[in-house]
Amino acid sequence: MVRSQLRTGLEAKGARVVEAENGSEGLWRARENAVDLVVSDIHMPVMDGIRMVEELRKLPEYATTPIFILTSDAAAQRADEGKKAGANAWILKPVKAELLWKAIEKALFGRASSASVGTIGVASPAPSGSK
Amino acid sequence: MSADKQVLVVDAPNGALSFVMEELNDLGFRVIWVPTLPSALDFIEARPSLSLIVASAAATKVGGLEFLARVRDFAPDVRIIWGVRDGSAEPPLAQSNAPDSLLPEPFRRDELRAAISDLLAEHFYPPAIAAAVKSAALEVLGVVSGFEVEGGAFLVANQTALSDLSAVIPFTGDVSGHLMVGLTMDDARALYAAFLPGAQPARIDRMEDLVGELCNQILGRINAFFTERSVSIQHATPIFIRAAGSTLRYPGRQPSFAVTLKRGEARVSLEYYLAHFDRAKLQAPVTTRVLRLGEIRYL
Image (cartoon, rainbow over all chains, first blue to last red; front, side, top):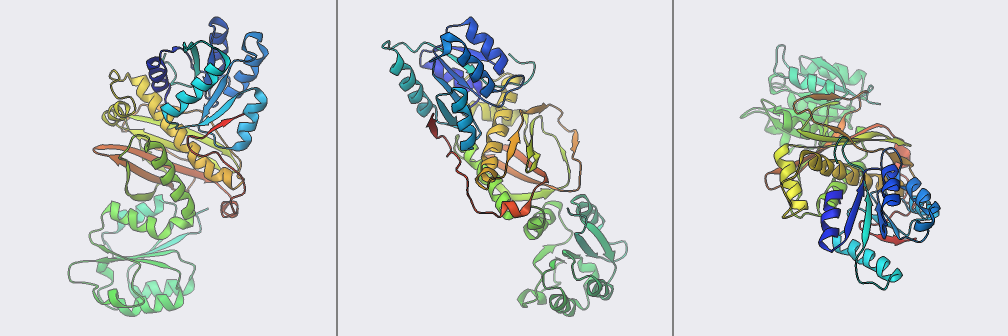
């Protein structure tokens, strides 16, 4: 699932989406925005997704925020690394949009009584030079 | 790895197989040419470890049946591609010592590649890898229905002509190499529209994003094949190339393994290149669990 595809799908569900192209930018965007849920790849330049999750968990405001790793890495051992870093779910790409959306709903509505979707941070690599 | 793989080309002097010899050389074979069947037999009897014989109809008009029988006796594992012209080489078809592949002459490059890939791919890549590459591509592209593998999978020489949009992801670890996915601009647009129905026409960077993501996901599925066998592998982020018509050359002599998938008129080209791997490890039983496609594992 490419980032634009993810963004389109999430916005269609009423979410506000904040995008980042790598872990470092994702960390910065998360600090600048009150993000309710993070979806991140792991293979990213500058800072990978695992490291970004570790850094996010050090921020008090992101201590309990649901963080999903959306990746093509199928190794169960890597998922354990994600768990150690503080991620809540490891989702193997490609994933059907509806399945992902159900997981997001479950995570968000499990921690808030509001039915509004909120803000979702998406970190995924992009071709250099693009925004 | 392939330096000791020898191919004997039997062709008349000034015959038509010079391009065949170039092709085989590019694929990493050591190519030996002989002009007649008797000289071919002399060579085979001296070196029965030969991998392949490619014989042209021009050199096999006389004595073909006897030649085939003696080769099968002396070097039963050698594979044979036999050129045929109209009305020639009918007798060997019904014999137990028949050639492995009969190709009409003049040889067509794609038919020759297909025959060589079919007969000799296992010399370079275990068949399980070919299957893993094809099924990975179908799994990922199967998200938009209708893709199928076009014409099997081919060994290609260690250089390739680039598409309008290409993404390359190198990988390292117990195995190393790269996967490249390439599309023409028109095919990228069609694919983008298939993945994002109703979306605005894609910008170039979004289409690159798509090509890179396809490469990433397909490589992830191929890597799952290795991970299941406890082969450690790490892959990097995509490198994007917009250089249609340019040639990318790979180091080393190992050919790459090419697959084309098509959906209607659109085509996605894949080249999978393994610079190094441990064949024994790949034949090991599945011991490590990997996540299924689309699986959500709560941590």
